[in-house]
Image 1 (cartoon, rainbow, N blue to C red):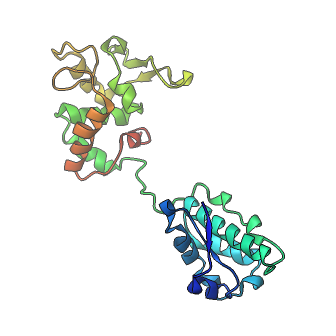
Image 2 (tube, rainbow, N blue to C red):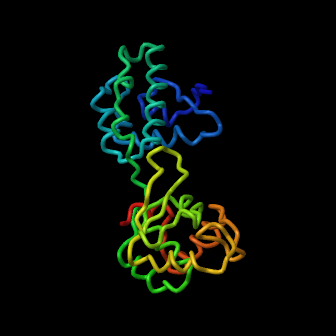
Image 3 (tube, rainbow, N blue to C red):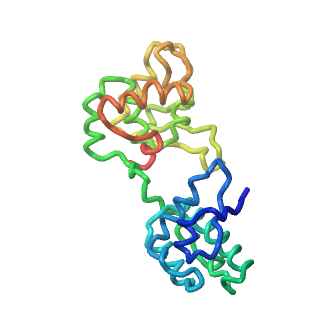
Length: 239
C-alpha cells in the first residue's frame, strides 16, 4: 500500500516544496529514504525543472543493484503521479527511466564462482580425509552435490572410469560423467569400503546423505577449518 504524507518538509524542500512524499508499506518502510538518498545529486533542482536525462544519469552513475533501482523507480513514479495531479509538471519523465539494463548488476556480490588454485592445493593436503575427498571429487567431476550424494555404486564403473547420473531435473542431466585419473583412488576407496550402504558416498553410520546433513556437518565445517569461503555450487565452475 502507498500513502501520501504532506508532513515531510525535508523531502518537500529538496524537491522545491511542491509535492508530498509517498511512503511504502511498513514492511519496506526504509525503502523511500534509501531511494531518495540516491538522488542527492539532483536534490536541489526544482522538481519541475528535472528532465529525463537528469533522472537517467542518477540511475547510470549510482552503481546500485537492480532491486534498489526498482525501488528508486517506484519512488519517482509516485512523485510524478502526485506532481501531474497537482499540475506541477506536465510530463511524467519517470515512465522513461531505464533500470532494466541493470537487471544483472549486483555490486555487493561476493565473487566466489571458482576455487582458487591455492585453495585446491590446500584441499589436496588433506586428501587422506575421506570427506575432504568428496569436495575434490565434486571439483573434478562438475556434478551437482545432490547428484554425487545420490550416486549408487551400481552406477559407478571404475574400470571404464565413469559413472552414470540416472536421475536429474532435466533430460540433458541424464549423462555419463568421466572420472578424472587423479581422483580415481577416492572413488575406489569409497566403492570398496566395507559399508553396506548402496550409495557411493555415505555418512559415518553408512546412511544415505541428505544435502543438509552433508553441507551443514561436513562440506561447510571442513572448508571453514581451512578458511575457505565456497559453496558446493562453486565446485561446478572450477575445472
